[in-house]
Image (cartoon, rainbow, N blue to C red):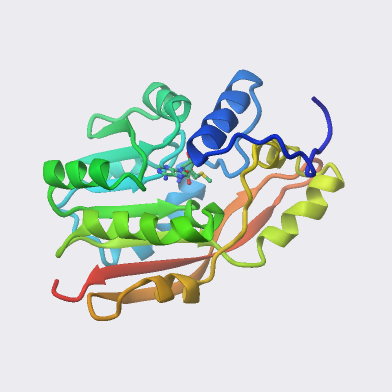
Length: 246
Ligand SMILES: C[S@@+](CC[C@H](N)C(=O)[O-])C[C@H]1O[C@@H](n2cnc3c(N)ncnc32)[C@H](O)[C@@H]1O
């Protein structure tokens, strides 16, 4: 279907259904993934922020890894990398196109505490990377998602979060209406809402008795291509978090 259907109401009703529906549509219709970028224009740009605090002798889990375009990069920097995502289609694409000898991909819901506990039991304390997941979670899921990431880092890993800055999402909607950002249409049509999230909100979700923010810096997420131009960089922020006892 052509055009933008921002008013559509018959979205799939759970995040798992919405994301699987999104990934199936863009894969079937060969539509560009809107936040996609080669790793050297994506995670490599963020690497100095990650490297400064991660323990490189431990594995890293990329929580919400999508189709794995950024995940494989970690294979050159960590002994073991596990990319997990809600969507089976995204994981299939990651296995097919973002393979690396030290990287594996699994379907997993980060807000399933049993699945997270089992992953922690298997890997021990790990580093965790989150890139562009929390800004589209409903408010009531942000706490459970963060709790999952903190469970995985345990006492000695580091959580690295790169998220769309609050307000950045306002740039998108006029561009979609003007037809300059057609790749965002399947995101919105499937009921996924880029809301943005503030560093203040993430800090508010943390218990300062147990965890500390070891760095927080403004950055950009990725250059998003527009029809007929070179595109623009999306304002974002990066935060590193560790357990206080570490
Ligand atoms: C905007 S994409 C970012 C993908 C990847 N981090 C990247 O930067 O290329 C967000 C991803 O998070 C996944 N996701 C959303 N909620 C999740 C959850 N509860 N558990 C695991 N993955 C989730 C979605 O399926 C989607 O692939």
